[in-house]
Image 1 (cartoon, rainbow, N blue to C red):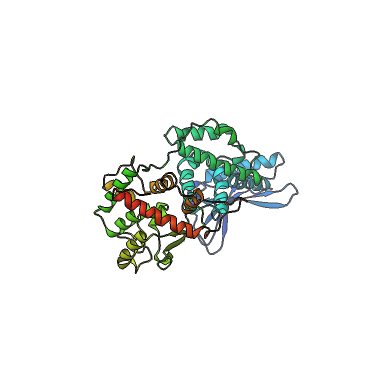
Image 2 (image 1 turned 90 degrees about the vertical axis):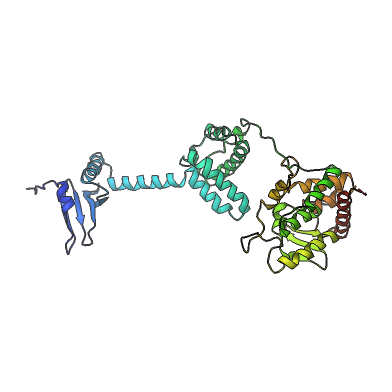
Length: 403
């Protein structure tokens, strides 16, 4: 005769105290509460598999799983057993499916893509990607299975970004999502990349070029304004040097004394955009400014150190803020505008060779056979060009333009 098991009560479960040895409180239908000496209480269920062997299911710990919840889980397992399904196998398959789903969401695949490409993409660009993903993409489609993503899903995402006035961000997100979808296709998590069919539905984004000055009289006025800048010596020196060397603002602000060759009158560093070595011939006017500044910052790593953060280079916004402080508006000039100014005037006024100008702008220049020129190519001619450019700027400053 089968032993009659009384059902547990919520009070019994709550009041169950640990003993020297583990013990069990049975509720019927194979369900029991296991009480460990450590005080832990765990819901488990005995059942027989289809081959007749005894097995055990674990439902979770009390009080996270209540008596009522444990009974519901037991009844579901018994219902599976009644139709020939092994509840233990079913639970394992369900868990595997959940793990597979978690690994194949858009966010999970994107995280994998970021890990793989973290050493291939510039840190600054990767930071922008992560900001766009966290702000726009993950909250919208992050939990969706990447293999089920359709063109309409991405179109709705991108149009929501456009609706916020972020046309450029929408364009970058479309490109980024395309790279991620192609990675998903390559790794077997998706069949196709639907982004190509979406891009034609986006609103056009008009590229904004950096403003600059190319009128010689206006350039002369700008140079005289810079000369009268009343701020710190560091910022003043950087502003004065910027038009002579016309490098990218970030590269100028992060110049190091170790890269300045006072004997050769050259500044050698690695460009921020292409990661290639670059040489900037320094005209006598630039060397004079640097020698004066060296007496003040030569003991530090940076040519233009931060005003108050020790060991840091000049703030990224320092040059722009200085231009604004002098009344030079956003529509007139930006620190990056010195590059376009030099490119235009060197070509149209001074008649310098195109390849020399492009070399000095640290752009990729190739020979007739399609090979990239060596960084020392035409260095003597570039020294001459940079000295001629410096003399021309001085003539504009003094309102006596010479060619």
